[in-house]
Image (cartoon, rainbow over all chains, first blue to last red; front, side, top):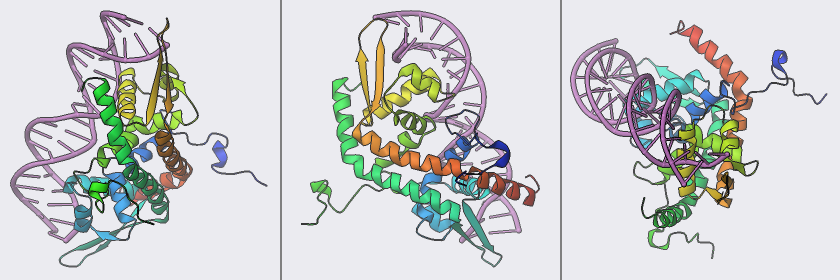
Length: 133
Length: 133
DNA sequence: CAGAATCCTCTAAGATACTG
DNA sequence: CAGTATCTTAGAGGATTCTG
């Protein structure tokens, strides 16, 4: 009654990111990647258009944003809504799955931001100890 | 009384990872990087030696593990405890700050692992729609 | 065992230009 | 506006060798 019952044919062998060949590693990299994390984080507030997103994710190039969005859309984390008007309008928004990811990502991001004073101090201590080298 | 009072000289300008020049971006990359995330995750269970860690983080090379550990130690997330015996023994463990990061990271990792069936299905749908291309 | 040093390869990512 | 295509380069990362 309390059995998990996922992936009937592979019960007892759940996805494990610590295993080299596990497909979850690829997805983890998409969501934690340099631009993936920031893109998901930005979309958590709500739907955004391509260039709005570009402005929020400060520093991302058109190419990388496009590439990042494709990977996230393919993984089912982002939904792309295109209107064939002129000029074109395309909105990106998180899927329910994407919201789950983004929420956890933002918890991590905020924790890191809030830890930066301590991190910067730790770096100074580390660098003096080893003579800036 | 309820003011946050962090970084007295820069109040009102908290670290913001969405800004290109913010130092929190570098730290976020250390912790979400390909090997950083897995290393922190592995250490959450407890202290580990270099080669134990290498076995847990399946696929990491000596060079990358060493490099990753240095970055995490410098950021104050991992503590390195060396015993100058022969053969040498070095233990790595999370600092309190590192535990905070690892906990949130593991929450994300588990969510991704648990979402993989849905992700794989989303990929199939995406790939047929666009003719495997 | 726990790394540092070296060499080499491949690809992530930036810059630029063009298109529907 | 919302991208794609092409070119180029910095650096991530692997393999190997050496050392305290």
